[in-house]
Length: 335
Image: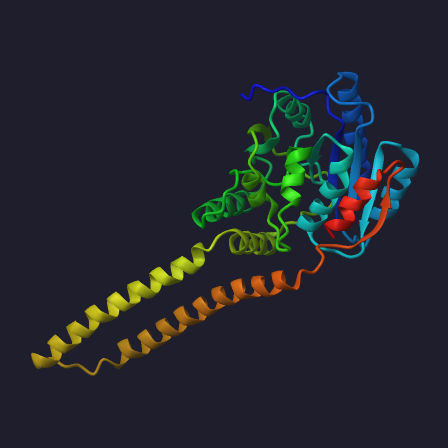
């Protein structure tokens, strides 16, 4: 364990929200009660706060955030101009919270991640850790398909060379310097789970059991999970390109052996028509070529998007009773 000890922090809890009207009230009440309890236990400062980020919701989520901000001084709200996706919304929240807080915890609004792990994360922060990963020890509340696909997702990412913590999503604590380090990565196609380990700094893990969703529906069905996997792989590793090279070498070697075999058969007088094998080989090579072009196209598309240097997001409204100028400046610079 690191030797340095951090003082009692001003804690920010960042909650990305997209169409969360059914769970918002429950989420806000539970997290507010947790903050009050941690303040009473002198784990965090009394001016710690919650920051809800509305990612272009189409329901009443933003209206509820506005109401909570007006009624509770420890609640802040950030509204993006349109739906930018979970990762961009989370980065927006981190950028807004970091100048105001010593440590930032990110958690999803459904609260399937156990909020009782947050005090343990803060204890790890006191012990000198800059990054504390929330790791799911149990997925008993998930369906068999959800559990199998999620674990397969992490194994696929590891096989492709992406550095990330197994069974860790976006429930984590970051110190202020860790957040600043993360925000220094300027790519627009950001996969935060893979970027955080690259930041470095002392890190540890806190285990918890995955809970059930109280209301609403999952924002990560299989389609979005596959898209997230593709985003992470193509943003953080070139392993698929190397696999194409290896496949090309294998096919060349196989073709050379097949050519030698055909010549031997010809000179020994055992020539066969062989049209089925020719047709199959044509379809096989056509499929390999199309797959290879698709992977290359994905990387070229990433390069195309990165060279445009488009903003990650635009902030429509920032509700904070005492937002410091550097918080607003930091938020503007990361758009």
